[in-house]
Length: 333
Ligand code: HSE
Image (tube, helix red, strand yellow):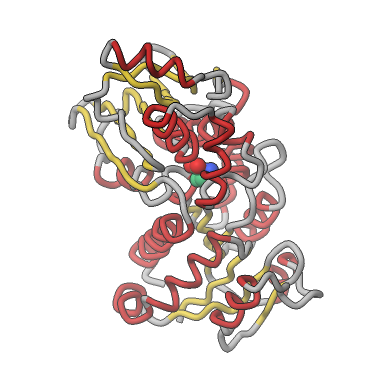
């Protein structure tokens, strides 16, 4: 029996809970029996060692209600027995908190962590990896980059043995949505940002999206975890999309190009950058809507391109669930 605690019960945490309910039969076949023994958010939580009533917890939050007060995430970590933490609290790139403390405290106790939270990995990747190793715990973070688009495990597992020269991609669905709508409708980014917020893909603070902060954070995670680099958020050269006008698309399109916010890490050329770039309209990175894409250049496998839905509750849950399954496979939990 795998006992799971979910920290953060916003769109991602609830998406995970929904998949755990809806796909119980399939998941039982993959990871055996499981139970969620605690769910918390920033204001409260539910602990039930016999299994939290997830449907009820989802209903409470969907109705804008609150989880019962008086239960904190740190209480759960200290007093509840569980095997895996799903850390899905809100990203803070500067401090990594509150996720950083949650992840540290779980790893210290040998509890495996699956997270969608970019902040702790951007702030303290090396420290967390060492902590996990020291305590024989696993730290899984597929959901931090690219939503449903496979990239971390794809590179680590399916491209194992390859040297990764560079990764160039579209890592922010909100900007991609805004730019592809600007391309078609010639609206300003402010007009379209409102739509992106409605789609539920923009960050809580959408300046994280449009100023390239979210994409830069993901780039740092890719560089450090897949390319053996040791880079910090401030090392990323970063320009967002706020100065792009609908007119820029007219000029680009006349010459057969479009404009996309490209995140790029290149070991050979020593590039670590997020910026709007001209992309030929037939290029694999000239994708539309909320999609993410990545072009991975390797020594042995050559070029690999992946495309997928980069944001959203269920999409991010897909990455978290795939980490849970991988955990089970390597641990036989
Ligand atoms: N705001 C992010 C995006 C969500 O638009 O890609 C996923 O990290």
